[in-house]
Image 1 (cartoon, rainbow, N blue to C red):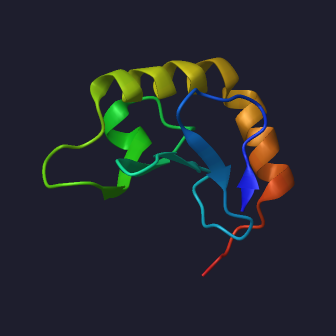
Image 2: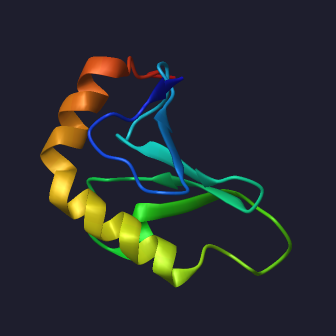
Length: 93
């Protein structure tokens, strides 16, 4: 597991798995509440976020959090891809 270095978001853990799968993505987690996979090359919310885990049924990730992640990703997309390419050796299976 490699911590994301190109940006931080207060209250969230952000990381790559070193042998993760395509498409390029990172994981974001608000401890004890939810974890999502963020496909940062996608530009629409529906395609960008995939919920890995959430506390309780139907609560989901707060819209304020997804908007903040979306805006931060948009500002750092090229750097994210470079960091993905440096840190992740995708599992082709």
